[in-house]
Image 1 (cartoon, rainbow, N blue to C red):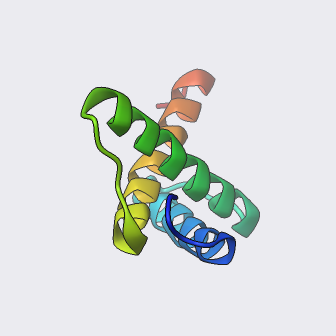
Image 2: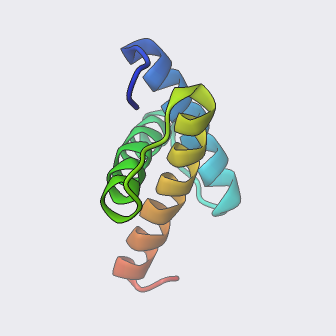
Image 3: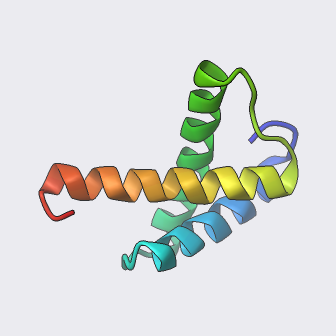
Length: 84
């Protein structure tokens, strides 16, 4: 979440986690949504930087990266638990 403040990162992370929760039909709390959204954006931006050489920027880019990354994290967790 490059270029935005901590408060905005938390807000975007919460929104991204909530959207991912709805997409993946999961049931998490607010704190988990925030963590999933922020970690998802960080992980997806790192992967984009390594594979394609660019990262998302701004509020919309961070939101999209957060949602996609959080969905990947939820999917990975389910795969590890064996209930994909």
